[in-house]
Length: 143
Image (cartoon, rainbow, N blue to C red):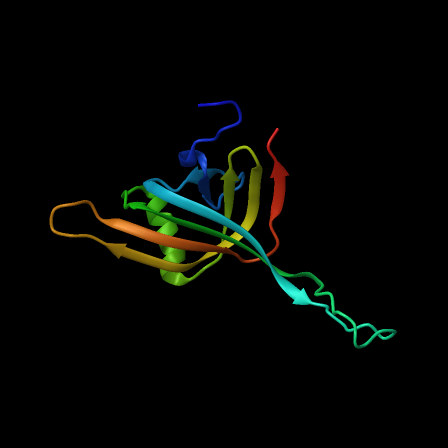
């Protein structure tokens, strides 16, 4: 790999074990993953009071921010997956970390907005999950 390039498999979501001290373990089995950092645009456009017939410049400011992780892969039965599934089934918030290689870590409370399991007769059970931040996240830049 060229300097500065990052491996996609290093984009991780880690789930807290809920103990003190807290230990974060990767959600195993993910093959495809994405992390979305977005903000709504709030329209602040106003026509000029001094030249109301003139061109109007569209302006905006950041609105609601969203931090969403999505992943899909092979369902791997493990202690960590069983603990994670308790959060999915009960729709509870848990502490998590999203590690973006070359950028840093986004840590804080998450919940699963969508979980789907699928499979056919011959292959492994697959799953997809969408994680949304439940409160503002703490960002730590990669050293």
